[in-house]
Length: 102
Image (cartoon, rainbow, N blue to C red):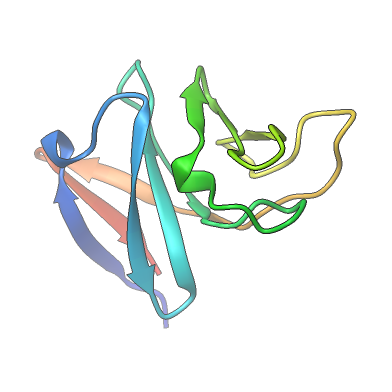
């Protein structure tokens, strides 16, 4: 059964940064972009399992810190020529709080 859990306030997440949330599905990286959009991905690069939460956020993409693979935050898909994807999770903002669907 999926449910929404509160994981913090908007201000708890740095712009162009991330926080890791532990869940029954493993570590989930929650990203906040410069334009204040939020995205949630499994915190594991599809290439070699690098921690995406430690990567560099730019636009709506994250660059993995291990080998610079670029992952789309909206879809979890690697940007060509790289291939693969990581799981995405639904996330929403409501009255200044951030919720994750697990």
